[in-house]
Each structure stands twice: as structure tokens, then as C-alpha cells.
Image (cartoon, rainbow, N blue to C red):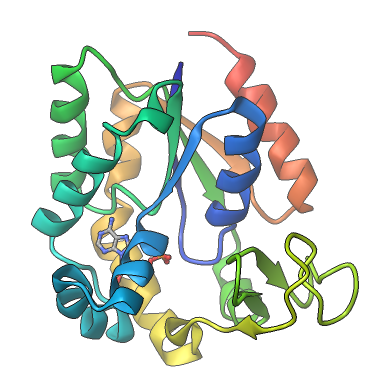
Amino acid sequence: MINLILLGPPGAGKGTQAQKLGEHFGIAKLSTGDMLRAAVAAGTEVGLQAKSIMEEGGLVSDDIMIAMIQERIQAADCAMGFILDGFPRTIAQAKALDDMLAKQALKIDRVIEIQVDETALVDRISARYSCGKCNAGYNSKFKPTRVEGVCDECGATNFVHRDDDKAETVIARLQAYHKQTAPLLPYYREKSALVAVDGMQDIDVVTRQIDSLLLVKD
Ligand code: AMP
């Protein structure tokens, strides 16, 4: 059982690494951004509340996010643990997560900070896209499909760009990161849970470094 958090600004590679580490360790990948996008697409109550906030690059309310994760971590696929991508994003979310885990005699084992050069982020984010059918993520510069125009995972040929990946929204998302999410770094450092990795390296090199960091015991 291992419970992990990936921290870092938008475009750091959290989703990509969460996917790989989730498969590697056999634990559930929980992406609150994916959950919210699904809620928006389905037109649920939460989706309706989140849509305009996401389009502006702001943060959805702590109450909504905490309820969403609370329900999700109780699902059967989290029995071996989970890797969180995009949650917590505020101190209030981090404290609520600690409380809900403590009630089940669980805790966060490691928080992995993916460090990136922020001047590269807007470029990185504008090059990313995903499969319109299975949601697999790609990047025309760093991780294109093996066959042009065909999803490696499911063979679909329709791809989508996220609405909030346009430059002006990315800038707002970065501001939200610095103001509301970056304070989580000292929060987890104090709990001795924080480790950092250089996210400017190749995707596989970053994964290997995270793997080796996770092997180090307290
Ligand atoms: P992401 O896919 O992680 O970049 O998330 C996309 C958008 O969803 C963010 O810009 C926020 O508007 C919203 N969001 C995702 N996770 C959270 C969270 N934990 N707290 C608040 N808003 C979130």
C-alpha cells in the first residue's frame, strides 16, 4: 500500500507521471482535473459549477473538491493505494485529506514535487493534446503518437486540446499555483514527506528518478 501526491505547476508532467506510476505500482491514479472535465462533459451539478471557473484558470471550491476525493478514495481500486494528480491544491484541501486518511488509519507516504523551468511551460502546454476517445495524453514536441494521427492506446483518430490550455488561461493557472498551491511545499516538507525531481528531463528519466526516490525508506 502506498499513497502518493504529485505536486508541480500546470504542465510539469503530473498527469503523465501519475499514469506511469499508477500502472507501475498497481495503484489508482486520481486526477481531479479529469474528474471535473468528465463532470463538465456530463453536465452534472458539479460540472455546471466548475465550468466557468476552469475556463478562467481559477480553482474550484474546496468543499466540492474535498467531497469528490473523499468519495473516490473509498472506492475498491484504491485498496492498494493511490496517486493524486491535481489534489490537494490548497492548504485546506491538504488538511482535509490528512483528516480523512487518519480516520482510516492511513497517511500520505510521499509527496513528489516535479520542478520545472516555468518559462518553458506555456510552450509545453500549447503543444499538448489528448485522444478524444480514451483520453491518452500526447505532446507534439515531447511525446507524439507513434503513428501520426492515430492514438497509440486505442487507435482512435480524433484528438482534442483542453480549453484551458490557451496561453492567457495558462498564465492564470500559474498564478493560482503560486498563490494557493505552492504553500503546500513547506506544509509537506515539515511532515518530512516531500521529495523533488527535475521535471525538465526526458519523461522516462523522470519516472526512473521518482521510482528510485520511492525506494528510499525513512
Ligand atoms: P488540471 O487538469 O489538474 O490542470 O485541472 C484543471 C482545472 O480543474 C484547474 O485549473 C482547476 O480549475 C480545476 N481543479 C482541478 N483540481 C482542482 C483542485 N484540487 N482544486 C480546485 N480546482 C481544481
